[in-house]
Image (cartoon, rainbow, N blue to C red; front, side, top):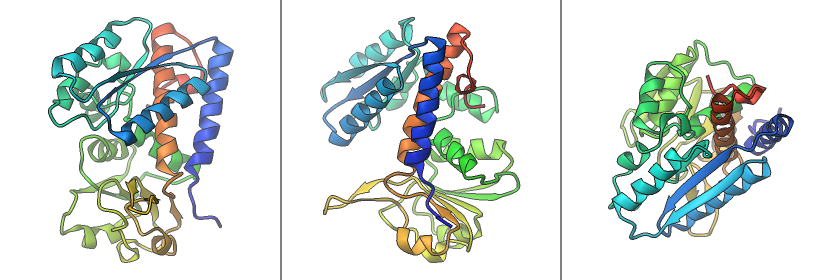
Length: 289
């Protein structure tokens, strides 16, 4: 049995079905991607998201500001997109430069266009288990697990990482779906003792290749959401993939696991936002409830 959870394959199929629904409905949702600064990885990610959106049949626009952009200039850029009736979804590429209050920037996104699910209002809706766009990484992981028939009800999910963008919303989303969730802050001394109790281990935060086989229960499902470029140019995750694979029943590769699913989820949320505004219908127009 192949243990790899092929996010690249699953995401390609997901995007193709979204593309078909857009074609059938005659819809062209518009996604605005806001970036700031000269971070080469951020620019690469924005270009990739823009390209995938266009390939799916959406209108994709990049609003890129220089590294010296002021808080007001960035907020005004987001507010313009929020007030533009032709725009269906807005995503702000993180991280932002150190001088920028990223939370204020995110909260300039109107709730109906918060397709990356990261505004304070969106997280509040998620906490209350009300309709909200799930953060793209969270939705991507949930859809990947569903594709591989991984049951969440009554399973112990351990999340390594308690950040506001992935760890916390991941914990809320899995709890709402019937899992028992333990969230461990990055660098916690309890990781070594708690991680091996997980039926599903999600490594959100951490240093390159720090999750070892002795932290994995035999037969556990392992989601590696890390992404680290090493000096030799290779890309690795938070787990020691080869040794962890020998213990896990299923594991995501890096690259080709969570990353492609995150982009596909962003496109689904954008299509769902457009459908909510226009009354269009489709399997993937129903959102991420």
